[in-house]
Image 1 (cartoon, rainbow, N blue to C red):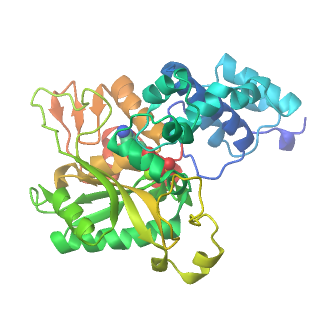
Image 2: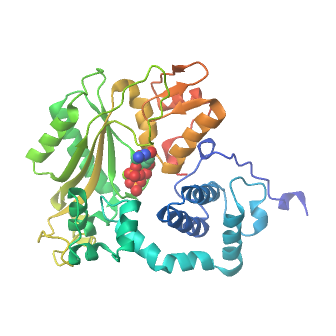
Image 3: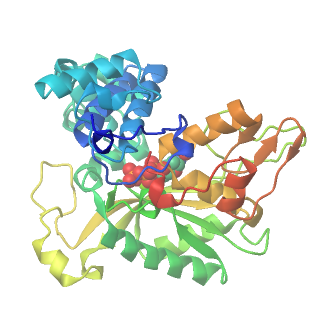
Length: 384
Ligand code: DCP
Ligand code: MG
């Protein structure tokens, strides 16, 4: 082989937080397949397996070109035997029988439909599946007992399963900024989650809110929620209180991965008239009023959108921003890197150094990467 024909070896780091992962990549056929298996493993409560498939998919997302032969995968980390087998099958035959079988299976389809209802997690969906329920309509027809979140999830099922566009996210940003600045002038509002990473659509809109005067943010959420409710902008909300207390004896990681900020899970009522007219008329994704009985409202003047609001004290804002920007795998890998490689414990609240037995403060995401001994990865390249 002439030197010019040799493909240079790719130096792929093994933690996703050490790599740049753009939103658009060259291997979506393979990553979609692996992510079906990851999702199925999640549905069957096999977390280890699920993470292994997600890590494998994530490595392929970071490749500078499409994989064409198994040779292209030489020396890449995180590709287990099972993932390699699936990739080989797709390269050879175009599809993987395991993936196709999974995709078509009754259990996978039912779990996907049931967990697609707001307020329904894997555990509940699994129980309902075993009771014979298959989708959100069964929840109505078989008069399943639902909590308030699930009621809303069924009621607004169609809207909540219609991807939120960037334009809608921008309209909601303006509303949230108005609400927050009305009840606490000088507050800072950041759009986090997938939209901060550059995604064109999302399943919800995530916001992080803080104020430069530490303490000013306390009890802020109820005020924001009241403001929004007074304007008739909320279809549903559930606020959880801040339960984080810095522990002098460390570590930072709460009992579960869930963080403990004051948080509001909400469903916004977004008026279509707030969106530009050109998108309004063409966009068939809006409920037409004629539905399968899950949408109780009649007009098509508004649509339901999931919005997550999180309030953070200013001193934790950098950690919260990093923790709420995602992707989920990127976050997971950051925490794993901190623990396994640095003897540190990272959460959305703080970074704790076990050797020094102290918290390491930071004012920006860049500083946190530096404290972790990592090269800074901008949000647009955290799409692991
Ligand atoms: N997050 C987390 N742990 C949680 C909840 C959220 O680490 N328990 C982080 C990772 C996510 C981000 O917050 O990337 C936002 O959560 P979403 O579920 O909204 O995920 P995305 O915004 O990334 O994707 P989507 O477009 O589906 O909303
Ligand atoms: Mg989101």
